[in-house]
Length: 352
Ligand SMILES: Nc1ncnc2c1ncn2[C@@H]1O[C@H](COP(=O)(O)OP(=O)(O)OP(=O)(O)O)[C@@H](O)[C@H]1O
Ligand SMILES: [Mg+2]
Image (cartoon, rainbow, N blue to C red; front, side, top):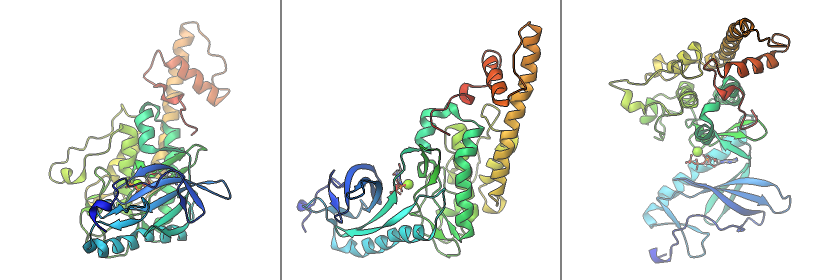
């Protein structure tokens, strides 16, 4: 087909029917390798996510605005090779089931390409959440929203896989309070000797910059630590190649709501050299738990100080000590004008 007959708009139109089963409702995202749609199951009325293989550097739509065609015949081999890799995401997801991992529902083939069908989650990805609510970061958020990611990683590591693309835009905070790890397009069995080079600035460890490096669970730990860092600082760590010779990565400090143990574990997880890096996800669990304890202690310590101060001023805080959450609320209310405890402890923009 000549170039002039090819259409540049990469997405399928609204209401387009796929395999006589799904109707496209809207486009969620257009990436370098795929287009993500929300589609409705025509019989059941349920919503699903459909991921279409569409490597934009190699293909375009033909005149029918649906069929995916290579821009040149020479690229056909490359397209088929990448299509096979794309399908591996579905194959891998079909073998794993975990409450913290996106649920795979099947594969379709049409328009000269492949489509993965996934459960649809109404919510917000972690990157967008932090962009909007950076101030609302607290221990409960880390525990409720990132614990499931640690669990999901432990689960896949035990099965011999690594995700290789852990980052905030691949973490979905579902409206009902669940967290789902998305995008297994880069995941591999980690005994494999050679790897495709796929990197994300700020989140990929140094070993991802070589196709022949040893990669393993410790590689996901780097990306997880970078994700924690992002949550607490509102920005990703410096890109790892820039840290190789002169490491200027800033530590988390007291301005961020992180306990000393959590900051240490995050920095340990961000060690450039895999040999020096935190090698167990358990440390992240311990640190998040400890964080909670540390925060509570902080609040209680402040509670005692404020109680004393209020008592001195002749003000009595009724109920402090009877009911923990009530006490915390009262302390926080009292603290807002006296201490640096942020409003984050009381703000809940999304059900946590
Ligand atoms: N199951 C889902 N439910 C709701 N939204 C989803 C789901 N899967 C993906 N998304 C949305 O689509 C975006 C892209 O998904 P995904 O990361 O799987 O695709 P991708 O092609 O690998 O994209 P990228 O290259 O941008 O990482 C996610 O960041 C999220 O906003
Ligand atoms: Mg992604």
